[in-house]
Length: 116
Image (cartoon, rainbow, N blue to C red; front, side, top):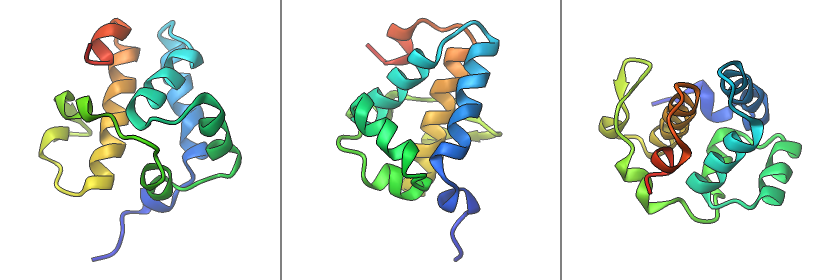
């Protein structure tokens, strides 16, 4: 089976779209970064280094310092697929991030987005 093309896409090429989606709805880049750090365990400096290196999605998640165990609480539909039903681990991580950014753009409070 061939890898999905998103695995080889640079995270930095998609990141501005996450920020734009959030900002269109009155949210901030800082909030997007907070979500990414919560999900992956990267520090802000490490996140910025990954963006600068143009790391692909597969490597971005593979090198994540500490994937948040609470991410299993993320439920719902992204692109017509239930994130909790995705079997492929890397795709599930990507969709978790998509879902969190969607929730941010829909106006959910950070406390709920970060499953506190």
